[in-house]
Length: 426
Image 1 (cartoon, helix red, strand yellow):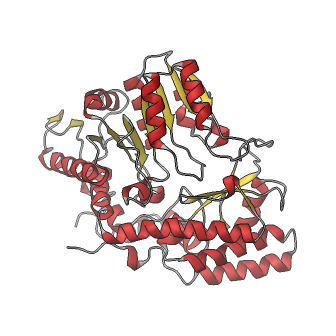
Image 2: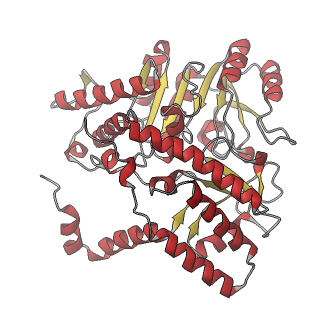
């Protein structure tokens, strides 16, 4: 094959870069990754990235390309589209966006005019920057109003959403979040959008794998447009996004992806996502997603037993937001301390956070990556105790060294990708 043994060739040609790759693989194997937005891509789903399709210019869409030699590329893209439709039950699919954030920008351009109004979740309460943050492109061309969380429940205040929709009459209502540990009521959002005469967009980049496997409800029946990335819970390679929409919006969406904001697609990424979609239809994938959900519950329950405060009291997704202030001064300090013992998390703002986004009062953690490695509920309870012990250790070097040794022992028992989750050929 054209790229067979390519890493061995790189090792000889560029040993410095080869060493960095090998060291990163070692770091991933020897640490415990709890970052909710990270996962280990399936060898099946990642196997075609960098393949010969990376060489192919396929500007345009199947049957309407602007270059020759695209007959096979058309079949690849159509196959990916057919599988995504089957997986999610959607009417139209665009596979070409390079990331979910790029896809979100294309959706806004397709549905709105400059100056139109958006209603979306407040960034510092769990929203995403591409939903209208003032410093992002999505917040600069439109008038954006934000809903947030109820101060007592720390869950989305749907009465506020309904009130703001009546008051501001948005053209688009966006639901979806980057650090929200609860399921979203897509049906209610759809009802509010229809009452306001607005489009509804659901960004499912975080819970997409759980949705694909039917573990939690899907927004597809209620939303006009759905956007997602393909990594995180979906367990595909990073990079690349998917847009799903109603058939009536298909031409607008496609036009504002290409030629609106992109040129030719990366066909190797689309080929890899076609394999990901087929894998997602397997029993092994569905079992994996159920375990992601169950492991998150075990992790949350044990953290609470250890005395940690969880935003909204827990989770019914894959993601947990922890208020660390009772144990340590900030999320930034917690992130650094945990990494020193081999537990990898990210600092994150909590609702009504008094500290800056660079410091924060919380950490965001999730179950997908360690589930991919093969961990089950009891393993996650043990990891929760290690995390809590670390945050309670202060600067006790002996305690930290002991925890680091226990973390290394746990990590050494698991591969990067557990065989039990690999979909079997039929």
